[in-house]
Amino acid sequence: MTTTKKPAGTPEKTAKPTCLMPTTSPVTAVAPTSASSHVLLKPSDIESEGGPTVATQYVWVSLNRHQWKAICLKIGRNLRYRRADWDAWKESRRMSTLQTSHEEN
Image (tube, rainbow, N blue to C red; front, side):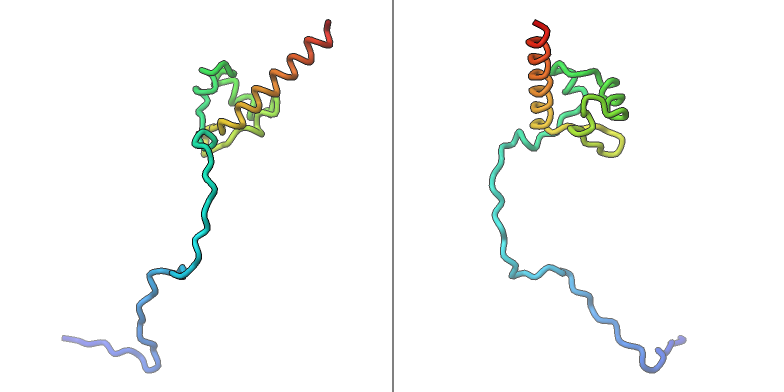
């Protein structure tokens, strides 16, 4: 049986700490928010609510038509939308449509 000797001056291995966070850190409370603000909608959800088709949504993101890129989240190659952003976009489009129809009359 052969034994290997460590060179002189080699430090001994010590156990690494398992937790780098201090255990006495204060916990901050997060204000509760409505569950609907955290909902992410898929392009098919937008289409089913009367929005543009899925294919149109991808084109609008690439061209940034109607400020679509501002309400869209790209997660990998997938699009997602926050409920609040989608509702605000619909409302802004509705208001611009109403203003245009009043100007024409």
